[in-house]
Image 1: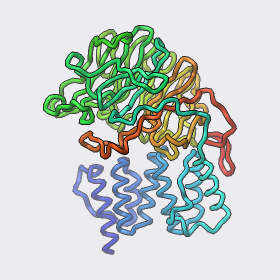
Image 2: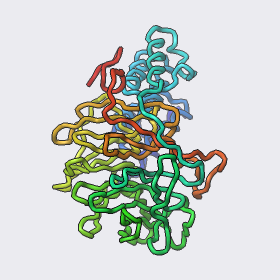
Image 3: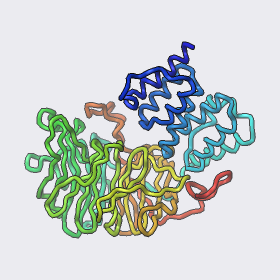
Image 4: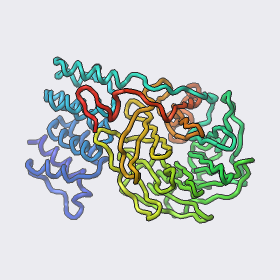
Length: 463
């Protein structure tokens, strides 16, 4: 009874906001499952799952994880933890089904070396699952590392194709700069933070070659070497430069709201020259059009918006959320919408995205494995009709971010973001461990008969 009271108290504690209209009261055992089924906050559910695990309450932990899987179907880690829990309870079929769901989505956990699955390892099905996961973990694709940047304290977090120069531009969060990338990996500064432009850390860059503009999404964070908290804390903006010579034109700064911080992390330019910027801290999207700067979307119910791109026809703005996947915004009506997604497609952790006619190219950083996918869209752009892998699990793809297309259909992205090599004060944890950014080049038209993603697999099905 004592342990049961702990479980019920935990449920009440985590659901305090859900039941805010009344004082939390102990729940009867038969009411625990319905209460969990009503919870919608993934962070609270994850916390509750941990509490239940520490209390040894596997049955109720399973209920919480099942709820997380329902709420966040794109996040494989929740399903994987559920599979491991089923295995520990000797529920073979349930564990196998959960692992198969992961495998058919392209996940590649090392289940053979996870001791939590000891109870379910004595069948032919287990042998198949281990082999299938190993196949998913094998490097895939014909992409290559096109450039390796200097292994210096630069924190390169963004890149963009400059059609006017036929050259890549790369942005440094540490230096607050944008540089031209030479064929030998040499960096030639085009834009550098100074008193005139007031630039901070560069988190994304976008090129409007037709109009001769370079756009930069910049935020004041401790990672920027010249950051001054008393002056810059919480500020961010979109900066406009002359593409030809890097001269400063104008900046559009976040509104000054007492106690509120902003973080501009994503940028995209539409065919009409309109610029769209993503505020990943407040889950908002801003637009610059005709010298006007305004917020066009605020989605407080979402968390951690990551990437943004405009469709090739300029009708839809696509954006990603770390756990929920992809969303669209109809630019004619200003109304957001959910994309219809095949059940077997996992779309979490999209940290880079580019659009071309009828397609989206996405870079996913943390499934595992890290991968690049080509998504075919319906005519109205509201449904993902099919998906195929372009690159996955390659050496150097430790944490891929960013995405940009050149004139010939080559997709470039940074394979190894160094963000985790910096502490909360923005300083390198160990300078000797800093790596030069590895920029991958992948052909967007690459095709193969690989059994990943939506294509049929043994034991799986295409949807």
